[in-house]
Image (tube, rainbow, N blue to C red):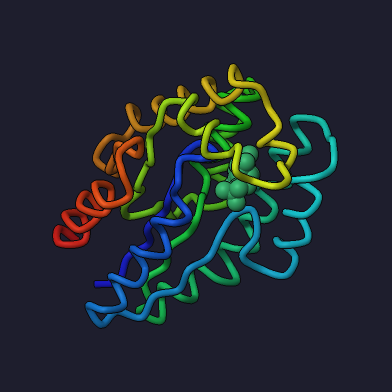
Length: 200
Ligand code: TMP
């Protein structure tokens, strides 16, 4: 059976590299796989992404735009693909709003829950791979980037709160998550991914 799988982690955790590898591994098993991302995933969502990553805005606006992009994404892309029997792998989903807007920016958790209920009450990922890494390791990896967006420019304390936000989400619903020790080498992380692929 096809599934909806999301990848999460602080900036610099390495999830995007692993996502491409994971999608290929699933395809080799014969599944039809679509890879998408948030914020983004639709033409409107990509325009919202551009604003979200570059333009200063209030916390509430940031959260609402994340969920507005998500609503388009859920309705236009994720649900139709799942209904057509495809695997959907999304680079981030609502856990990122809880971690970044809730944990990082301090937005009320209950308000975010209401938005989540509004936008996708009937849909949750079947599995979320959370790439967990100490903030100092993530920071070193980000140092290779030529330019940093509005989130990546935040201080370490912000990313500590984001990481704590992710841990809170995992604690609330542990059976949905595979927590991956992303501080390990690429090969060691891939070993963990192989075991996950074999289990789904
Ligand atoms: P990316 O760099 O992994 O593509 O993600 C873009 C940034 O957007 C990343 O710094 C996390 C942030 N983000 C949020 O703050 N809230 C959200 O709901 C999502 C999906 C992403």
